[in-house]
Image: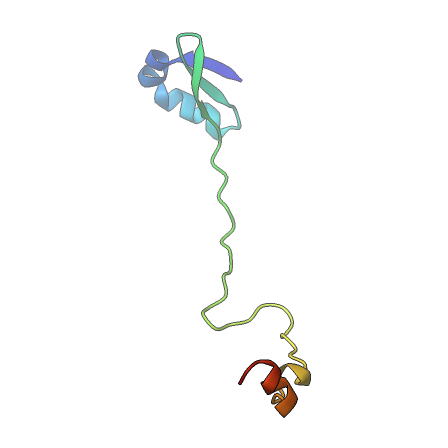
Length: 80
């Protein structure tokens, strides 16, 4: 890893970019403090997001009990 000043980075940016393309890392310093790091760019694989309404994975199974009509007793319990 190479550490350079901001002045050095501005003056020789093309040279340092060529080094980074080959896999090197360059730290840009302001005085004794590191402020930035040049690293090789690694493109990310595009994420395949589902379209609106499209499902991923297995289908949701809703039990019949969840959608059955409430009995008269249950309606009374709910005050309906």
